[in-house]
Length: 262
Image (cartoon, rainbow, N blue to C red; front, side, top):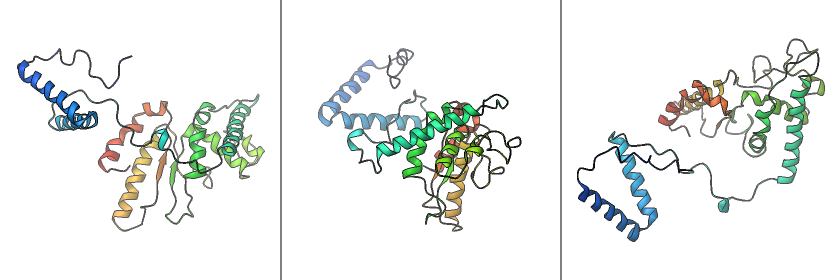
């Protein structure tokens, strides 16, 4: 399988070398650079030249792989701050309850179903966030703003059940807001139907990603105008893989990049 970061085989063949001797001199210079300055320096200069070439609008093939800037190699990982065994066990309970919540919503006479795999495939991300990253409104900095992936709502309900915030009867009312005795749980994050549980709506698909970007931009505005200190607040957005096909999921990325919201 070809490295996606390599140039296409015909990228150079499609062009005419008008000065082969000069080309050979450039190759020799680069070989000397690798030999005397090392591959790291050579790589930096090549990336710098590519970046400069794009600024000159030379329309070179784009690099399709980027450096890992939001993670670290395994050898630099710090000690896990919690008890991995206990957290894994709790996560298994939550994942199981979420699956059964959806399964029971498909029982005869109800048949509303739900999404099982969305939370099952992302449970570890949510649980590590809940246990070690997310900060509530009582935090001195004002707390974080979290846009949960809409189809993963069974996992949030399942966790709330373990925390004693919901009863088993309420879980049996998933997706039955009107028909379930006493009211049911909304299908997706819905702050109007459940104002004490959900803060932001994230469905229809793509609503969460675009709103997360504008929330971060608004936080920056509030801080910049001296209206509110939002410097210690974080905005989190969880996206589904199919959700990234929605135009709303990527429409605001240029804004996030331009404003350096990361």
